[in-house]
Image 1 (cartoon, rainbow, N blue to C red):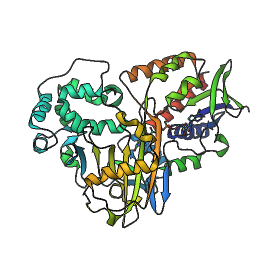
Image 2: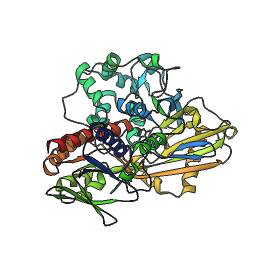
Image 3: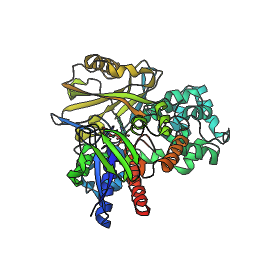
Image 4: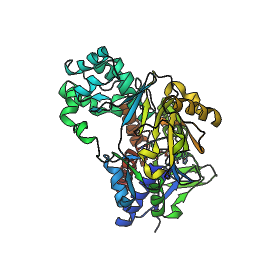
Length: 467
Ligand SMILES: Cc1cc2nc3c(=O)[nH]c(=O)nc-3n(C[C@H](O)[C@H](O)[C@H](O)COP(=O)(O)OP(=O)(O)OC[C@H]3O[C@@H](n4cnc5c(N)ncnc54)[C@H](O)[C@@H]3O)c2cc1C
């Protein structure tokens, strides 16, 4: 029987999850479809990229998934990887403000004080800054809005000082973005809903969240990876896939709409005829890929930022001033170019051989994008200089691994959700059977990408069955 082809563009976690769920669905329901997955790179996994060296497990890209979001854990369990899961070790974390390392105050959620006493005792914010922040309890809810910037929302509720010293370093890091440009509704819609319901974020969090003080201490970490690194998930997905369905080292040039479906033109000159397409590549690739359709041009103006991480391996003894904890984030008002530092050997003990230390630092804040392009030697020198301001490291690293990620972090700027809804509506009308998924759409976290991949599969199958 002639099987209809469903083409998946991109073999990152979104494309791989789509391929996995699609193959499962086809097999379970004996559907007359075949899968083709086209990946430009010579490997699958996209940003998930684990590197092994001398007994170290080093993550070039993401290092973990948040366990609270179900689609990640569901996939891991289905793949039989549960016994390989490791949780992060919990411990004190810090914020570096104006050059000084401060303990993250107890009883705070994402920098927002849920408990007043530890907040009042903390030195992260001045007395007037604390007074201003606590106005959140009295000011009532803000105007109803479709969207607003995360920064302006937080600044209105808590004042600049708490935002700059505590909230911004925690929230911006997740998106490598500028808090004052980021969309509240696309990143933390829950904060808006709590404000609207309780008239105060502090009250709203207290009503709805478990008390942070009760969840600290020896509670299990909220993130997970695998003993051999995050790429274990990719390897398992690849193992499950029918190998004939995957084309590596092949870039989709563009997609043409035809009477009966789509012609997908590859950079090697070949054409694949597909009845449906799941496109999982970053948003900046889409205007050219679907150049017959103007509605995707809006992506040309959606920014994406660059970051680099520098992993440094040491003898444990090289770190003279060890700090008890798992790492720190850096506020913008500090004279530092690193934006965050993880003491990976403490947060993920299975990543590092005994007697060694593994420190991973990020660079590339929105106002310092050019640092990502500096030569290795210069980058390492900058990172070591920053580290030595807090840690006193006496010798050179045994080795270092630098991973540069250029224009890869899609920026969910104000209006993101509406923009995406509009694109989906247009795609529905103009590109029936083409579905977009991945980190440029409904969430950058790995579980969000897995969820989008699975959702696209249901949409494709429904489309082909009613066609
Ligand atoms: C440094 C870093 C750290 C991160 N840390 C975390 C973390 O700890 N936890 C977390 O949950 N998330 C984290 N993220 C985010 C998360 O890793 C990504 O959002 C997610 O992996 C994106 O998956 P994706 O499949 O949507 O895209 P990608 O992984 O970008 O995959 C897209 C694929 O499409 C391919 N492609 C592109 N163009 C074409 C074309 N024309 N034809 C064919 N193929 C093409 C690419 O080669 C790539 O393989 C991090 C991201 C980065 C960069």
